[in-house]
Image 1 (tube, rainbow, N blue to C red):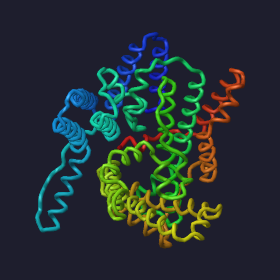
Image 2 (image 1 turned 30 degrees about the horizontal axis):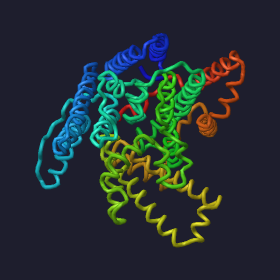
Image 3 (image 1 turned 90 degrees about the horizontal axis):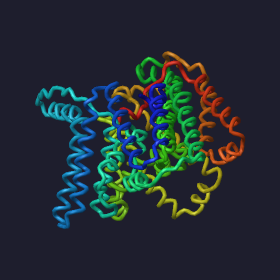
Image 4 (image 1 turned 120 degrees about the vertical axis):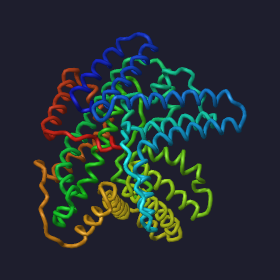
Length: 479
C-alpha cells in the first residue's frame, strides 16, 4: 500500500470518487475515517501485524478523552496532571515500542564498563509504522488544549480523522491540530484548480522518489552496506549521492502526501523548501522537514527556555533539542550523534553570527553574491558529511567511511546507475523547479483540457520509463 503502488492508486481512486459523490459533509468525514483506518491496517498487515493499528486507535481515544477533561477542569493542578498523563502515555508507548531494546542494550554496555555482566536479552517488539509522527501530533493537540490555544474537539470522528488521515499518517508532514480540525469542519467543494495543484504535486513527488531517490539507492546501498570494500572516490560519490537520495525520497513522499490531501480538499503545510540552497545550518533547518523542526522549536526548544537566557543556556537548549530530535529518528547511537552534531553546529552558527556583527567588512562580504555562494557551499558540505552517521548502521561503519574518504585507498569502483549521476543531478534541478510550479501551472491552466491531460500523461509516462524496475520503501517509514 505504498503511495506509488498500483494497489494504493486503486484504493485512492475509489475513495476519492466516493468522497466527492457524497453530498453530506459528515458522511465524507466518516468515509475518510474508515478508509484511513483500513489503509493503516493493511499497511501494518503488509509490514508487521494488522493488530498494531488498534494501538494507534487506542492512543487517539485516550487523547480525545484527556482533551475533553482538560477543557472541563478549572483546577490548575488537575489540568497539569491531565497534561502529564497524556504526555506520559504517548511517550511511554513510543518509548517502549521503539526504544526498549535500545535502552536495555545501553544498560548492558554501561554495566560492562564497570565489570558487571548483565544479560538483558532482546524483547520481540513490533513497532506500529509512523508511531513517531502521530505521537507528536497527539502531544501537539493536548498541549494546545492545555494552553487554551485550542478548544477541545468534541466530535470523536473529527479527532480520529486528525490522527488517522491517511495521506499524513505514516510519515507526515506533522500536522497541527488547529489547522487540520478547522479544515475538517469546513464544507468542501470540488475545485479544478486545487485538483491541478494536487496532480502537479503528485508528479513532483513521484519523480523525486522513483526517478531520483530509487536510482541513487542503486549506488548508495552497496557502499554503505560494505563500506570497507570500496575505493575513496566511490565512497565520496556514495556519500554525496545519499544527500540527494534522502532529499528526493522524503521530499518526494511529502509532495505525494500533500498532493493526495489536496485532491480530497485538505491543505497540509509545506515540508521542504529547497534545503540545499540554505546559506547556513539554521537556514537549513528552516527548509528541511519543516513540520518537525517547527514542532521541536514550539514544543521543546522554547519550553526549555529558547534563546531567552545566556549564550550558554541557549546553546544547551539547542543541543538538548537536536539530540532528542536525533533520537526521535531512530533507536541507534548514530542518530543521537547526528542530532548532537547539528545542535553543536546551530549553537556555533549563533556564535559566529554574533562575532560577524562586530566586523562590518566580513558581514558585507558574506552578504555579497560571492559570499552567499561560499556560505551555500559550506552548508551543503556540512550537510553531506553529517548524513554519514545518519545513514551508517554502526560507529564502525561510520569510521570506515570517514577513513576511506580522507585517505587514498584502493577498492571496488562504484556501480553507477544506468542513468549517470550528472543526468540525475539535472533531473533533480528540474524537480526543484516543480516546487516553483505556480507560473507554469497558471500557463497550463489556460490550455485546452485535452492538452492538459496530454501533458500530465506525458509526464507520468516519462517517470515510469525512468524509474528503476524495483522500487524502494520510503526511508522515513522506519521512523
